[in-house]
Image (tube, rainbow, N blue to C red; front, side, top):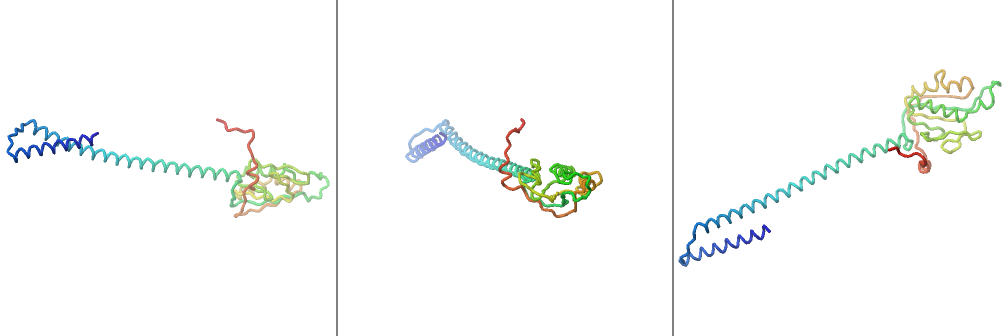
Length: 242
């Protein structure tokens, strides 16, 4: 080891120094030739080189530790940014799929069975059916609705609206008329989508005599899906395509 060698050189120098000093003090006729002096100088120079190398090694160790610290800091920063981005994506997915409470402008619709006294209209055509609500939902979505709720039931891409006798089933729960539909989005676009002539809602109201009332709102609140619905839904057949 360098340390052992360095120590040995110190001992050798020490012994030679004592030997030369003793020879001078006692008048010993010791001949110190140039080779001996050259050797002593070489040893001394080597000692200086070793000291300098030790300093260099310590400096390199310090630089390595500094670089390691920088790398850890950079990696932590990258991981932190990645985690923030992932959390943002998760929140967006929860929002788009109805698992968050939302608030914003939009419209409120009230749809109920027909009150028309026109006897030429069949009794079944005076009742609001699942297909009527489904078409209205699709019209609102086409007009840019970002969140929809019907009688407290949040509508998402996997929601079901089916007939159940005189009732409708939405997300597995039975609801009855009148159907109160709230939709968040551009109030003007949503209003026109269910009021302009030729729209499905216009036909329900003006041809079949359904009660269809619409109003704009600038501060609607739509609650998230019930927790049980979120937990009970399970994908069974669809797989992620590689």
